[in-house]
Length: 199
Image (cartoon, rainbow, N blue to C red; front, side, top):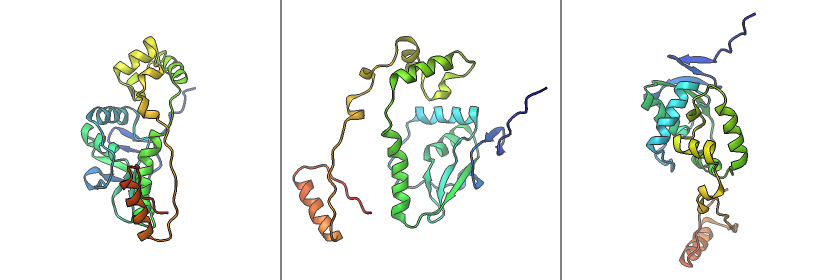
């Protein structure tokens, strides 16, 4: 008896859409947030476009109902344009304020950076994958990285020291915005690396 083939939630041309989404929108109608601090190198966009073409849409582009701007998925939009995909699945989200929207955008970028890679587990998993008929670049690793992983292994010397540098902080609760500004300026003046947080 033949195995039932899993059906995608939708299709965009020949590209399956596997992720949950609210609607499918023309890419040209999607508006990137001009305050997005993340940039995407050409190599990353090229690889992401290849992954979307080969595996379909596994994550939607998140758009704020409040502003109409992209919150998550700026890179996916660039990748879609690069490989000629004209539509994208969109997840529409409610945000109570501009601050909440921007905080979610920054967190989406930052949280991925905070993950720690277990080189040994990655080497074993990649070795298993290499035994199957799969394009290894669909893992997100390019040819040089794959050679190191599958040939000689990846070790901690391959990871820049500052990538996983520990940071220490102090949170100061202020009575007013004016107090916050005064304390912030004082600490900056003393040479401390500070940032303002509003909760």
